[in-house]
Length: 302
Image (cartoon, rainbow, N blue to C red):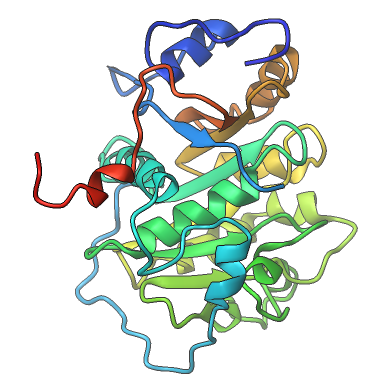
């Protein structure tokens, strides 16, 4: 949605967003890609198929403590917290992504890139909330990768300190990417920091070593999904390269701010991924009148 094209009153949110931006999903393996479920995020406070292995690795090492109060104050989903409208919205979003990740015709469907056209449109907000929601799954776990190398913010959002990360593993073959992963006290959630910024971030991402490093993230853990918090597509070149390594892209569109031309340009840069879905962020109303979260307060009534 942009200032010149207000949302219509009919159809699902994604259908209306697609009509506004004239966004048509591509075809893959003879199957027409479909938009995910209606995605309506409230205004915020500013696989290749899954690999088959004989055994899933289990981590028993140290875990850092995530500041829950910091999450709550920033408006994020709080692990083991009460059901809210926000947590319900991300339950809907993740379900479509999890289903797509299991499809045999989607290469690297377990890798999900969260992007936006410009900064401050909610990509990190969505990436972190999506990761927290997936971490609650009983059959999956999630690795949240801070791939915004110029302006990393995942660690600070969780109240954690910086350390070596993805870019360090790409630059130095002696550094194992597994050793850079931070395991948290939130069951099912691990973090891979951005690492040291270089003057050749895009070139390192485009090197042959990147595929090897990314494969190691799920090689011994077939139930792990990897979420990348990408730089904005129109502000930093790494986003287009990251898209070519991902099986799914979730494009965050800021209500009343993201223009049609910006979205078109961004989608063109992310064309290296065949599965792109739109999520409308920062909406102030629900045309369908839905009120997620409140149902859980109705007790036994139905």
